[in-house]
Amino acid sequence: MPVLQIDGNDFTLDGAPFRIISGGLHYFRIHPDQWADRLRKARLMGLNTVETYVAWNLHQPTADTFRMDGGLDLPAFLDLAAAEGLHVLLRPGPYICAEWEGGGLPSWLLDRPGIKLRSQHPDYLAAVEDFFDRLLPPVVERLATRGGPVVAVQVENEFGAYDDDTSHLEHLAALLRRHGVDVPLFTCDQPVDLARGSLPGTLATANFGSRSREGLAALRAHRPTGPLMCTEFWIGWFDRWGGHHVVRPAEQAAQELDDLLSTGASVNLYMFHGGTSFGFTNGANDKHTYRPTVTSYDYDAPLDEAGDPTEKYRAFRDVIAKYAPVPDAPVPAPGPKLAARTVPLPDTAPLFENRPALGSPVHSDRPLTMEQLGQDFGFVLYETVLPRSGPAVLELADVRDRAQVFVDGQPVGVLERERHEHAIAFTVPWSDSVLTLLVENQGRVNYGQGLHDPKGLAGPVRLDGEDLGGWTNLPLPLTSLDGLAFTTGTPVVGPAFHRGTVHVDEPADTFLHLPGWTKGNVWVNGFHLGRYWSRGPQRSLYVPGPVLRPGANEITVLELHAAPAGRAVRFEEAPDLGPTEE
Image 1 (cartoon, rainbow, N blue to C red):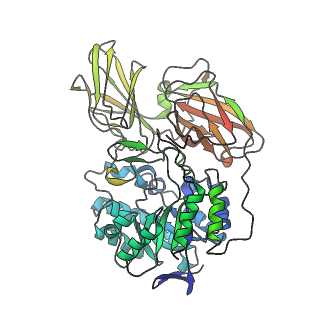
Image 2 (cartoon, one colour):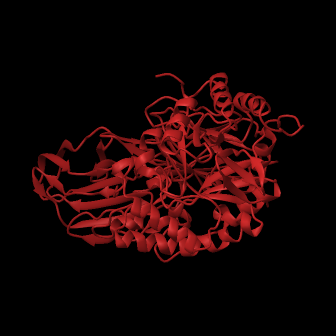
Image 3 (cartoon, helix red, strand yellow):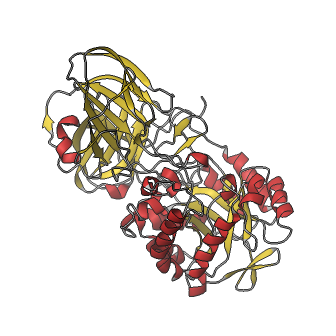
């Protein structure tokens, strides 16, 4: 593949002038069987480059394990991009933001006393160096200087919004160079953060979604020479639970793109295809109030969550054609969808009764956080015996992020971090009643100073002002549901798994709707689709066609409250991402 170089104020590719017209898509948010389809559609829209982050927390789920297989086979993704004739901008972090759990930083870092993330702290640097030792060798083989598609590599991510320690950026850049990364390095920051987040001798780029000339002028004022580039040109946005579905009109976004390209600058659309934060991988924001992000990462992008071209795809293609060659091919048609149908879920497995199949308990004087239990995602089930009966006030000093409270197995309330709730009053029936707290990690903070975000119970639990001890902590990562004991019968009180099967002749994409359900998670054939919540705005979950198989398909729903009468879900041909205005 041709090699990207910086020549004065321009990029060149093997000596010829070159403008990067790129779009973001994250391989870890797309089923691997669909990578080739999404890359082909990127080329057909007129992109010559694609951009992806690297999710450290998925590749290295524990300090001593590393994965690069299946949906994490980054080398395979890069090879597919090369086969499509696309260049790649690689953003390996280690921090990525991306509305991704913890900004991509692995949760096991948080159990290291005194660690300071995104800094020169020795424990953090040692972990980063170990990660790069494992990640970079197959990546280096795919650099453009070795005939591969990767033309440039980013150092950190929007560092200026977090800190101004240039020595940390220098360390990361030197680490990349030491591993053989010899293509151009770059940083990206919002215009106001350029001075704090850029690195002398390294290409600086800006992030914005409108007023392109102002953003580029700020970049030029900061860097009098060098190519102008917007690394994150925000053409849509993400959604949070309890908000509305954010959209940006195609005509307006296309005009902003036209304004940017008319300056001669390079661009990376954020996002070209958003995809899905499958499983427990969504992030959260906390600017004095904790706000978890929804499962869908549709982002109102040119390709929707199912990979179908939108009005924005057509509008952007027309704009790009004014400035660069666009393939002489029709806009791709939408992919096939499964016909609508209702799927009953007659089998039930109560969560509390199935504890032995879900995890091994750990005993402690005080509640342990998820990180102290060696757990990254999911829930923790805490239990202790209450010392007395009668009216009482229960206080949770620091719940992260949502605690369902039960006394002797009966629900008495919910405490949410998002709503700044810490206490609940109830009557304890017996002096040896059992207090059960089911605490959900709703997503670690991915941006700002709140990154150090331990989960579970991060502080003491008190009854009428007195600390409770003698805890049983049961990690519930829900990585496997194989041991659950299902029965067919009446619904139970409290959290439970509900299971049913559906016959499919020919697998295709579909959207699972959950009318009447309250909150929980869904698996199809063991593949964890993600979270649902009646709070909205999202009211359906994307089911990639490759998750389904011809014949019988198993659907499992964990409902944290009460299943609706009839206990059924719906497959529909279209999603429901919620209302677009509050």
